[in-house]
Length: 106
Image (cartoon, rainbow, N blue to C red; front, side, top):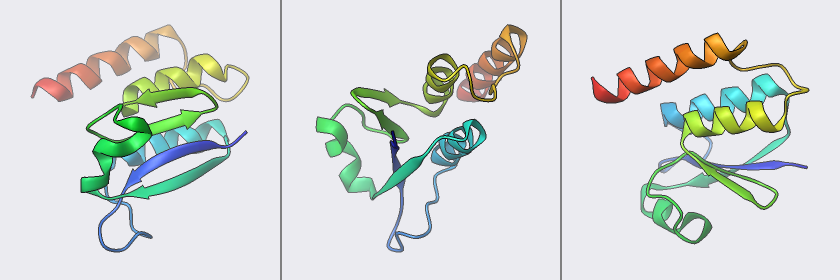
């Protein structure tokens, strides 16, 4: 199954520019999962998946919709444990949570 990633673009759809979407793209690539992208402009974001989020990245994996790059990484690690890990265990996950939270507050 292919995972759909809503990716932020400007005038040129071939040049996504959101670093948060890049994090999700790299997590998906590291896991080796098939993805398709939906180039999305700023004004289109509130309409994604019926208005589930005001920000990107957003992924749809079958019936599951996941919002936020860190939540996407957690979801991918839990849902696809047979693929390479994104965190390298619970210690790595705890460190990633710390860095994610710290970066949101500073």
